[in-house]
Length: 296
Image (tube, rainbow, N blue to C red):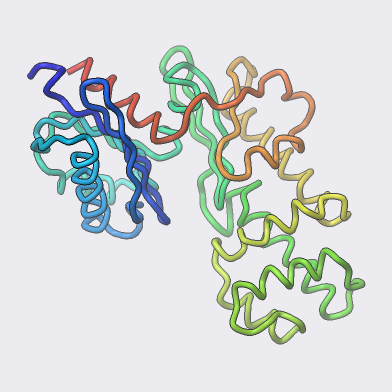
């Protein structure tokens, strides 16, 4: 099949939404839709992806079969073997299919396919590296609440202890504890103003709710409790990079919603390694789709 007859498609899919970038004969479009993380089920993931593929066709003004599509995907949950196998088994006929984790497509996008390392910092966290010899290394990604160091959920969970201590008198109430309670209240039908309402909030809080407290931690970065958490986040980023590249030869890009805010807390010894990401996860997926087409 001629290259001009192939639609290149990259997908970045998670538990809250999906981005798709499609390229046809030099024209590129991006569409967005609902979740496609594999933890929400393979049928749901494929439903979202195929619906977005139809939107991309319309945006490009073309009508192609899936057999003319080289599809590369970075999906949350792709590292879980049973979900991965079920997803691949359910695939329609395609010109090419490559499934990777969203962390790997973030790595490819950040360094444009070249050797490098990333630490992705959002609700959760994970580190990935691609070495010059083709070796791939991954660290973290163990999930909330045991892992995800330096993530939004990690910061929020630990910061909530300051609110606990303030509301029951173990420490004085202050602007930081009030900010945490205000952030919790926006996510609850009952304002968090005392130990009882805080207990109710904590009993139903998940990683998304705890991550919503991270902005309060960042705004109060000079508070001793917040400062200690942010300092530890920077050290944990450094530990991930050390595990990814013990020789510190690879450029390191911090990615995700908390990347810019936490960059200033990374230890100074990493300054020479830090670079800005060149592209996004969906751009990395599209790059892999193009590579797949070239190799086929």
